[in-house]
Length: 162
Image 1 (cartoon, rainbow, N blue to C red):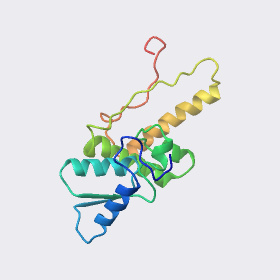
Image 2 (cartoon, one colour):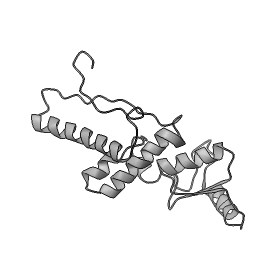
Image 3 (cartoon, rainbow, N blue to C red):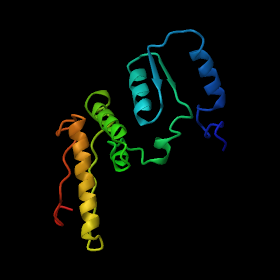
């Protein structure tokens, strides 16, 4: 299937895109303009439309073309940007996650626990690096002012708890 075709049974496609772009450019005024349709932009557009607002949402590519397309579809807090020293982007991601979890879409975005098994096959250095990454993510949470009750701290589990 090419990038201009819609999936079978989908109302999304090149013809609809052309029609809606023409409607958006016809001089009318919309209530909300969303630029960028990654997870945050798509969520903001959905929330505004669900509240009855007239929404125009645009992206340089197609819906979920970039990061969202390749990811697990999770809202992340910027840890991967922190790992590549993109501190400003990491902070922005953490702030956006906090806003989604606290105000914009707490009904859609919730903290999801996960277990990172540190078996005997994982070296002490690897385990320390994993723990440092989890703590760095918690520092991002704190810097973004996301409350602890919204996003709990990482913690170690005993073998029995796991």
